[in-house]
Length: 290
Ligand code: NAP
Image (cartoon, rainbow, N blue to C red; front, side, top):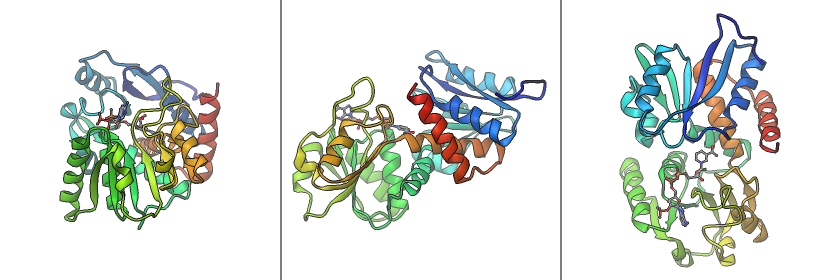
């Protein structure tokens, strides 16, 4: 634990609920290891008070904040500046103190990219399936398109939500590379090649363990690598089904780690190397398993 004195700076998490967050484990560990006089604490923000929380944090000289559900979009009107990527995604998860307020960033997507690189999952040239068409799926589609994926197919319960993602990303990229389908339409995927599949729904997340958005075995025969953005439980039903069909499977815990690491780098200007990142990952996993 950092020795708290008159120079100690505070960072924290705005959200509701915040009780089960692992972010304090990541940031307080990094502060200790990098010798920063900084503490990180969760702040439970009551519904409708996102603006008060941001203004109050500035008044209290907080150095930076993470933002989680349900405030990732709600805080945007209260920011002084918005990073280009966060604007494009339409959601922020990190606030960095600036002149007169906070600047908003989105470190979830660069976090996912660093996690996939670390896990050895290739994007460039890959044909990809995305399960889900919520806020995170939209950002994932944009990330994959920008990192040079091949065909991207969004499979979602509400096909219109996938179509909206396809319109946005194709418009931004200036070419048709994202296509939308209903969940059961996977049978009409062209050819017989296997895909990288990103699971971006909340189906299967604690406490609804044991569920997958698609249960059919033949779907998983079209998947060579399954990347679930859920990190609790550590092995989801989607991962089990992917592995049972011979694919590789990963969970969202490294994404969680790297979104935190990138936030920490933005707050402190300190770059976190892979060795320290791996130690932070171990700490996070220990806390998750307690
Ligand atoms: P969201 O905006 O609420 O979207 C949820 C998506 O799941 C929607 O497309 C919805 O379909 C679909 N869905 C929900 N229940 C369903 C059901 N019973 N059957 C079929 N589809 C269903 O959520 P989000 O903010 O994008 O988050 C998605 C996931 O990303 C969550 O699991 C979250 O934990 C994860 N995440 C992980 C990290 C990390 O660091 N690892 C960071 C951020 C988010 P409809 O469009 O039809 O409603």
